[in-house]
Amino acid sequence: MIVEKRKKVAQKKENFMTTNQLKELFNKEAKKHYAIKRRSFEVDDNNKQFLNAFCKYFAQDSTFETKHNGDLNKGLFVFGNNGTGKTSSFKIIQNISKLYTIKQLWVPMISTQNVIQQFNLSESNKKDYIIKYYTKGTYLFDDLGSEKEASNYGKEDIFIRILEHRYNEFISKGTKTFITSNLSFEEIKKRYGVRVYDRFYQMFNQIKLDGESRRL
Image: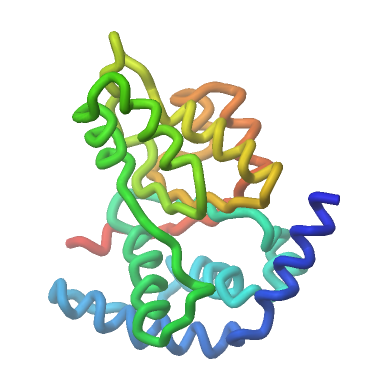
């Protein structure tokens, strides 16, 4: 029943924009995004395959599943080296969503370090509220793996709890999670444990963004 419901949700989102249309908008807005930072944007051998899959996913293109072995009902885990454009890619999608009023593309974003900071600054009786808040609804957690352990009568890796709860939300409601990280799935296992690692295979499509840092 859950799988059938997810398929219906995916079908409803189809055809609001073609992949080629989204690629054109992405290229246009990416150039503006990087120009603000006095850098240029080009589609090259390092990002071409990534951008193709990335735009297909957000356009709800069925070939994301047939040609990229993906699942449109899952979230995205975008990983790669520092500075390759992982976070910027999502910010560009956010810009497109706002500028062209395409609600389907909107994904709220917060850095994992910011979540930890909120948790640490909260009073003891409100810390669980932070966990619950970031359990609900679609979210992009930026730079997973860079955050320090939180303070909670000692040290705690609270993203283990958050990700476990979000897995339950995904199974019961189809709630999507998006993540950027410098860590691979294998490195996720070392940091967060086998249980979270196993959940990731069920929750995410993995897309790697290769190349040297674009921050130079």
